[in-house]
Image (cartoon, rainbow, N blue to C red; front, side, top):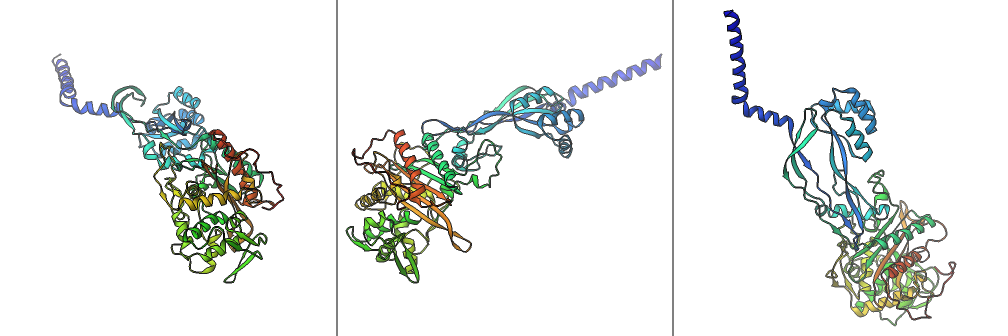
Amino acid sequence: MLTVVAVVGLVACAVLARAVELQVIDRDFLREEAAERHLRTVSMPAHRGVITDRSGEILAISSPVESAWAHPGKLLGHPQTIDQLARILERPAGELHRYLEQRREREFVYLRRHLAPRRAEQVQALHAPGVELQREFRRFYPAGEVTAQLIGITDIDGRGLEGVERAFNDTLRGRSGAKRVLRDRLGRTIKDVALLQEPRPGERLTLALDRRIQYHSYRALKRAVQRHGARAGTAVVLDAATGELLALVNQPSYNPNARSTPSDDESHRNRGAAATYEPGSVIKPFTVASALRSGSVAMGETIDTAPGTFRVAGHTVRDVRNYGRLKVTGVIRKSSNVGAAKIALRTPPRALWQTLQDFGFGAPTGSRLPTEASGYVDPAPPRRRVERATLAYGYGIAATPLQLARAYAAIANDGVLRPVSLLARQAPAEGYRVLDAEIAGRLQGMLEAVVSPGGTGHRAAVAGYRVAGKTGTVRKVGPDGYAERKYVALFAGFAPVSDPRFVIVVLIDEPTGEAYYGGQIAAPVFSQIMAEALRMRNVPPDQPEGSGVPVIAVGEEP
């Protein structure tokens, strides 16, 4: 009995000692260990800012979705549950087993990001050990392919990769919050314990873009590209007075909501800002501008373009036909390469080169688009006569459609050049004068003649409005020099001439078939976009009744 009593007493003393050790001596240590196993700090994702057009129409918005994650060590002990989970997540069971096994030592791995609501419900109902759902945000683009290259996309973590999303990422992204949660032994959250940091949503971004004009521009461009079997196309619409970007559309395009096209695919390329082209004859107004401001050519002068060719240092400059003697306005109206070359050779060697730089060629437009190209203007004035001659009609220079639109906006704005603005503005951006208002007014008259009957751009006419613009047709460079049947067709212009509201540039890349001139395929697209933009903004007509431009058959002079 004494032995039994002694043993029981010793056991009781041992239990008491252990209790004292756990409750008193090791109390803080054990509390910390328990907290480590059951309390967790969880990130709270922030809502990315909404992108809207100038009227508040949503162009990009983040919507809450669920993502599935797991503690591999807890889940690996239940092979059958992994098989069920694999079916719900549409992943091969063997691949999911290997994925978890390779990450056994981790406490957190994603199983599938951005689940569809039905999938998330199935994962929740499975009650798999160590598997949880986490709230995240997925970016959606209501306008889809219409604004794809301009607005851009984000990665799965909400960081801007392209377009406006990338350019204004710091403005749009929010600041993640954090909270402490209590979890059970299976890793499931039981309740929130404490809010450590409130998430801060990103700022709202209001663009200058007009979604109505964007939609119409996209439809008109897509129809033209398909009709002419073209490789690509782009159209840019600027507010003539403020420099705001009202529309920028591209073909081909892609669906930013699908994320099935690789980001290096051609459809992701914002050709309006990132692709450069030799602009061809749309440069001729700047050739004339350089001659007028240097005083080397007067408005009333006549340029002899006969017999339709002109030899310059072994190079032959050609016109479509022999235009004979032309006034300076006639050189622009008929788009005479010979006339432009002769005008350029009469001006000082630096004159045209300096004019092109003054109008922003060879430099960014100020749009802040991350992939915008600067184009190319030779860093030094051309010395050889043949270089000066070809530069006069748009060869030996590279420009983006956005640069062309900005330069034509300066002509429309009486010689004041302004930066391109992606954001809606309350007042015009500060610009600077690059051309006397008197010369700019003369150029406006010349460009209006281009769209009149007999001009190369008569298909750009809009009933009831005075329209000014210039056609361009450029042979593309290939591996062995300029290709025979590869062209770029352009039209750049503005309206109404009496008070310019919109500047539009249309470019069709590599059209197929018999029609490939800018006046044949780019000018009609310009007309469609301009007519709709003027109607949408309720711009009153400025052309007197009875002076409308007659319809001219397609077979006539391009």
